[in-house]
Amino acid sequence: MPSQGYPPAHTVAPAVRAHFQQHIDEARAAGDTGLATVPGDRAIAAIIEAAFWASLRREEGYVPKISLAYVGPEEGSHPLTFDSPLPLQPSLLTKVAPAVERAGIHLAIWNDRHSGKDGFSVWGTVRNIPTFCFVLEVAAPGLLVVKHHRREPGKFVNVVVLEGDQIKIVDEDASKQPDCPSLLNSLLGFGGRSESVLARLAVSMRAHGRGGALLVVPPGGNEWRDSIISPISYAIAPPFGELAQLAREEAKSRDGIRRAVDAIAGLTAVDGATVMTRDYDVLAFGAKISRRKGSALVEQVMVTEPIEGGAVEIVHPSVLGGTRHLSAAQFVHDQRDTLALVASVDGHFTVFAWSECEEMVHAHRVEALLL
Image 1 (cartoon, rainbow, N blue to C red):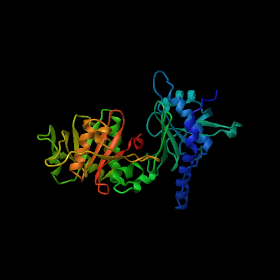
Image 2 (cartoon, helix red, strand yellow):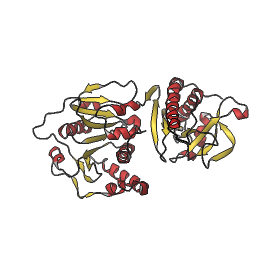
Image 3 (tube, helix red, strand yellow):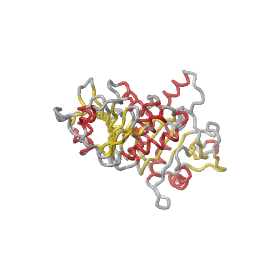
Image 4 (tube, rainbow, N blue to C red):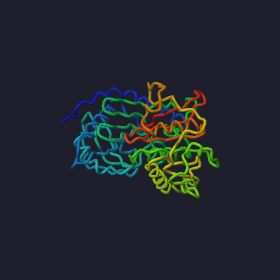
């Protein structure tokens, strides 16, 4: 039986196709090889539509977590190939979802015309996919994320987030804005190795689901203590430097970095804020933020989200959330060479930074980049 319709799939398909076409054309012009095939509008809409309805189903009580890749049998190395391709249907996607729940495994989707059908089928599973391959992940019921694959193993960049009838197309030009934090550049796919560590911390903080705050301060100074209530409940001496050491040896220590990142992200679940230097030395957790002596209360923050059509808002920081957001905005207002990363229990994620251009705290809403 054909799946039910999902109008956002057809609405967003042309923009998604244009995104992949542009990146692949640019990469080809630069002499890159091993590039993916650009899916057409019909393929994109069909994959999104099937994944959306599959996300609302249950298999033995479990919510399906599926990753779909548009990749041909000749494009992926060492694929697991089905003897008979499966129709691209929500019911079948739900049944095979347990096989691809682990990170890095994708159901492979391709044209089904070779069998005389005018549609698309699931021909197997793949782990190695070409650069700029179209990938669609089911993050939660009714929540889908279109991604493109970067050249680095396991690296992806979010392109579109679909949640019910909401469509959020990531604005890559957000990285060109003045005062754009390096963390945002990394999440948009333009950052270097050092920024990617903060990006991993942001993802891990959001994943634990308890909410939390991470303050990133300059190394070697103690000015940040002027904005923290003393004594600190859980000060660390000497500073915890495992992540700092591993980050210097990233090529050799990817698994170690992941474990260290998760350990530090876990500290942020404790009431209060975790304090870490820009060199990734952890100084404290459970720290309580206070207004620095002589400093004014922060009354306004500028809020942006790196999605196309997103409007700039000037709001009171309490509009963004509770005490955690208000305290983080005050900290950055008083300590202007710092960053504050704040995860909400509801999944929202905000990066606070001081904007020299606007002379106010800039709140970057980045949850669309972390799914």
